[in-house]
Length: 258
Image (tube, rainbow, N blue to C red; front, side):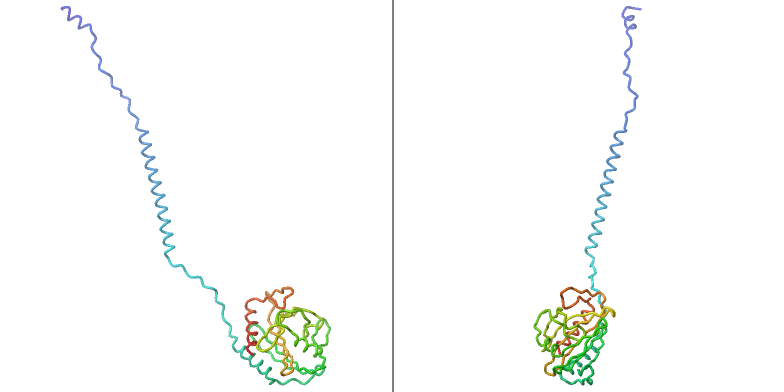
C-alpha cells in the first residue's frame, strides 16, 4: 500500500445533508379561507334580506289602497211629519183654527201634536184677550198665574240675539230671568230656549211668538230625549247629540218656511 492511498483512506467520507421530515402546518391557511366564506355568506344573506324587503315595500306602494268610507247612517223618512207640521202652522197663521171653549179663566186655546221619528212636536195656541189671567204650569205642587198682557208685552219687546229676560209662558214661573235666543223665522220674531223635564227624561226646544194679525200666542215645543244632552250655563240652548239636533233643525226649518 503506497502513502497516498493510506491518506485517502483516513479522510472521512462527506455526509449528505439530512432533509427535515417535519410536516408543514396548513391550519392558518384553512382558517382564513373559512372566514372569507362565512363573510361572503353573511353579505349575500344581508343583501338578499334588503332586496326582499324592498320588493315587498314596492309591492305595497304600487297596490291601490282602499278608499276609507264614512259610516253611512240609515236615513229616516221625515217627509210626512214635515208636511203635517207645515200644514198645521199654515192653518194657525192664516187664522183657520178653532179654539176650544174658554176654560182656563176664560182663556181659549188650541193644541195639536205632530209625531216625528225622533220626538213629538206640540203646538199650543192661546187666544189673546186683554186683561185675562191664566193659570199656568205646575211645579213642586205650586201653580202660578200668567197675565196675558205681560206675556204679549214680553213677546212684542224681544230683540234679535241672546237676551236675558223673564220667560213668561206656560212652563216657567214668570219671575225667572233666563237666557233667550231671539231669531227671525219667516216673518216673525221667536223667543227660542231649551227646557228639560228631568222626571220624564224629556228635553224640549221651545219656539214662542206673538201673532199680532190673529191676536194669538203661538208656542211650538219640539220634544225629544235628554240622553247625551249637556246643559251649558248661561246659554238659551242645550248641546244636543247629532241625531236630535237634525230633528230640531228640521222643525226650525219648517217654522222658517211658514
